[in-house]
Amino acid sequence: MFDATCEVLEKSTEEGNFSTRGDASAAYDAITSFEFVFVLHLMRNILEVSHDLCQALQRKNQDILNALTLVSTTKTLIQRMRESSWEAFIKEVILFCEKHEVEVPDMNALHIPRRGRTRKIVDQILVEHHYRVNLFLAVIDTQLQELNGRFNDNMVELLTLSSTLDPRDNYKFFSVNKVCELVERFYPGDFSDQEKFHIRMQAQHYELDVPNHVELTNLCTISELCQGLTKTGKSLTYPLIDRLIRLRLLL
Image (cartoon, rainbow, N blue to C red):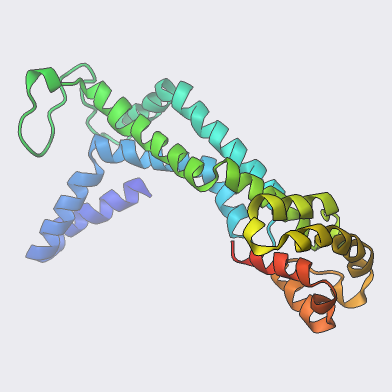
């Protein structure tokens, strides 16, 4: 759409009213700049890497374990982009600019900020440094920090253990040991010592009973499971498991 967009803006610059011509001209100058093309390619490359993860996290019936695998692979691919893709990336940007007649700056010239006071000599950097460090690496590092912040080790462990409550495929992820570990590691203040002791046996009964209950089969989400336990009265039979499921829904 790049050429088509430029064509529309050029036409608006020539044929629009005074206000429209000014806006169109400014927009045209912006999108035909090297920095715009550079940022556009960087955005596209990062979004390509993170697309599958974003889609997985938005699915209502998501598989937590597979989503967490995508977190790990996305981090790895973005880190790989940071470490070894600069040369290929800048070549791609320059080829695009040459094809669409966008002026390419001299990468070995001094970078002059578009706004603000002129930098002192000690602060002067090359154009290549500006695009590689101040934009390319800075944006990638921000993405990595965001992923690490949202999916730190504790969060990953919590989500992994929480998958034991997933009712899909007839409760194939359910594990008595993981239920107990989930309570001990992440919800110690929500259960008394006596309840922590008793939940193991309750989980064993739950494991043999609930997957065989006709109204509790073919469930896909934790929310559906919570509703089903209430509807069938199993929430009263297994109050500790029900409490843990409700705590999981607060994530």
